[in-house]
Amino acid sequence: TYHLIDIIPTTHVPPYGYGKTHGYTKIIRLMSHPLVLDVTQALNELKTQQNQQEAISWLDVSVAFRQILRFHCRLSHVSAHTSLLTLDMSDVWTNPKQVSQQLFDFLEPAGITEKQLPALDVSQRIPQIQAEAHQMLMQSLSSQDKGQDHEDGVYQQLNQILLDELIFTKNMTVWPCPSFWTAAERTKPSLPTGALPTALARALSPNCSDPLASCWVARDLCEARGDAACQQQQKKKK
Image (cartoon, rainbow, N blue to C red; front, top):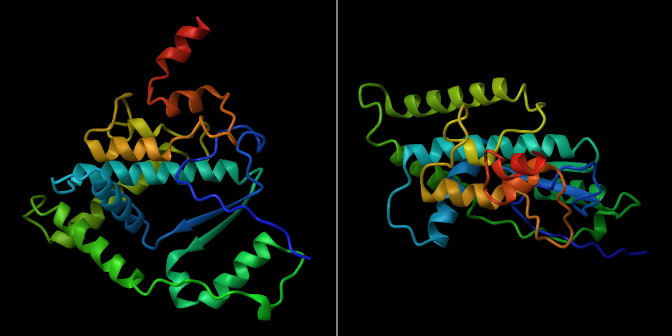
């Protein structure tokens, strides 16, 4: 017996609401290792989409890193009521057979034998993409911290951002998670500086116009329209 499965690729976080607001039965999260590769790949894709000529800056990278961390904070909440499988992209090309089995066990636990597994379309360019992402990250800091070892300085700053976000989100448990739109300055509600972080905030925020979604939590409504301070919601409450 075979069951039809609709796979819906998206960058938007599901709305809050105990599983009845996003329409998904299961969620598969794809991650890169190290996590900063997700950041550089996202920025590079957005830069291409927007035909941006300017180089990706350190500010873009640092803001986007916070945004990606907040994306995972949101998914950590969703996993409390919706089945979530996390796949490391490096496993996709180093052990595709195991990843195939993981996917089918997750999506169809009733049982698909190993002989029935289709071949994954494994990109041979993943190692190259990761190398390109690392190079882009280094180039974005070409004018930063010239007095210290360049590469170590980059990752030290990223480690500090990671530590800061983990403290700020209480290890990804705070509710609601911090806004995608305040990642440039976490102590003051303000839009991210630069076109790329703004585009990324829009891409990660809940898509309240999705027919599968139902946004009724104030934070989701505010995120969807880029209202980091939730000013319109506050006015309605008054």
